[in-house]
Length: 219
Image (cartoon, rainbow, N blue to C red):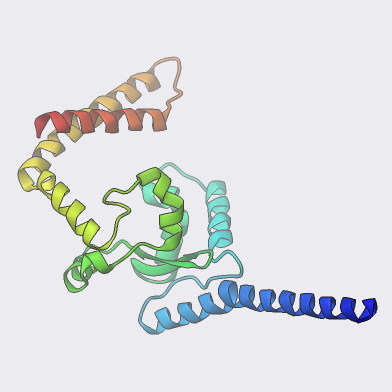
């Protein structure tokens, strides 16, 4: 076989491979999310339309940037921390909708009654975790209740359930209130002093650790 003929075959094979790769990426990152979005919409789950190739991530960043320009001090923490969720709640008229991170759809639920109904009608151990959650969060949460599925989830849930009975929860509430009040008082003292710089993350982590430690001693 002549060299020119062999080169032609290689080029044709490479072109076919690249074409196939483009088709696969286009379907996985564009066509499939749009199809899934339309199916969810027909089932009553509204939400922002996913955009190729990052879903709603770009839209989320734009909302954050616009929100930073108009920031005001209020007690509406949710709107400041998650302005995109607040915006989508108003845009899609509800507290239940689907948004997209890349090609993965996520169900946003801020309706307690809806969640209660889902918990009763759908067996919790079959809910499953999205692959993006398992891949990205496993290093953080390990193999505990947050990450496991199926029968392992049932076993972990059975182990931790006694710690959340009404008696223990009432004790936790008292501890949470005492620790949080102590943190807030420390912040007020700092604000009244010459230095008003507060490391919010550090103090919240320390307060959470204090609550956990004191709760374990009470149980």
